[in-house]
Image (cartoon, rainbow, N blue to C red; front, top):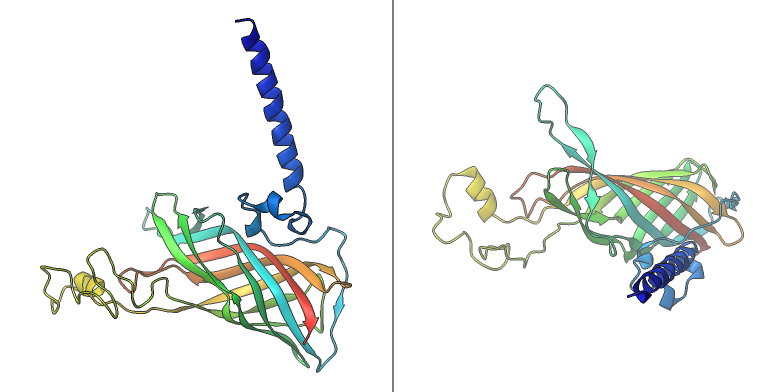
Length: 272
């Protein structure tokens, strides 16, 4: 019986030491961690970082051939525009909880970086450039959406990459569902039933028609990339991104919700 307090104290000490060690691992940047330290921790979802002292410049020659590579965008905050309870108030953006925690980052994005007389133009060409994410609204509703950088064309009024360089442009938002997806009643775009069993396909009810008639709905978003740290020797940069887009429509059966997605940004400049 007398050993119980001693055992409890020992276990508490071990827990404190374990927590402290875990904190020191998380204090490193992702580039400093090995596979064993990253595996099953969720840290692979983070973008690479640069130290606070990285305040350099990446010079670019006019007419030169450059590329942005290894671009990473990790969403950390998602706001959703919801209708107010009071009709006299306007719709506003509210905080949401990101339910997709370990697979929300788009990374290894690459594309051409053109240096012209009017500034810089980044044209995205590929990479892991979309992720399916679900967020939780304050009222308990779950909202899925496709976070994407597909076909992003962003321009900046600059002739070099510095800590004051800001890109802005538009991108394509693919449909959350593909054409072969079947809903719980077996309805789909290219497969499955044309309508739910017991419902008249040619019915004039608008809600039923939207549920029965599946559509591949794409959207367009706008994105800004704000660079805050630059390593001129390695060509790396980090910052923040902010994207405005809409949520999934469940193949046209629901009205989309406006979303504001923001988070970490990382990338590297290379000569093509």
